[in-house]
Image (cartoon, rainbow, N blue to C red):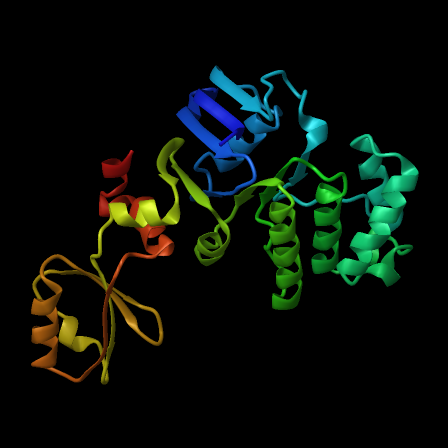
Length: 305
């Protein structure tokens, strides 16, 4: 399997602050590779090193087969978290401008722009100024600008932020199609459920250091099956004071319980107290794993560095 992005022992500091420390990772060509981590953990700094906006203090960054600064940038599409479009320009004009920055000729760009605008249900807005668009519309325009030049590598930083369910599905379908065409996608998100659904592999950075890297299955297998999903008749009070129960998280329709011990012992204890309507032993979700690592008071982050 070829590699679209390779970082080798990369460190980046800003004054006394180490934003990324001794980071190595490989993004397989044609995959959807998820970047997760709390705010300030080093995700954006890592993305900017891949884009050669920042240069590492040490280590190497190779993108699409080259380590030369900015050499691959015309083959990369980027949707930043901080959205920005020229508000006084028309939609079609701003997209033509971005296409030109990627080396597309105007004739090719216009045809693709029309196709993408129709796909995003924005055809009637082509000659309107960006400033009159809703936030969701503007976000779809920025997505089009990132994919218009048919990039080999597409970096999406929180692409679904602020979208309603209909527009979210439109963008989701476009990402899936791009992946099917062979585009490598780096996908940064805080939405763990979306990461679980979309990503082939997941990388988590915490305080500048890599703490997770692999498929969802391999990541979950590291944590074992210590999570129990419960639905009890009435309140969750029967769980209080039970030995071995280290965490109870109310998910609405059911509770997630972390239990240190034989689950059958917990089941027997609960049956003696109340009616148990659901009892499922499962692996922790990516959301649960994220919380375990990102909450310093749990003391678990250090165990996985």
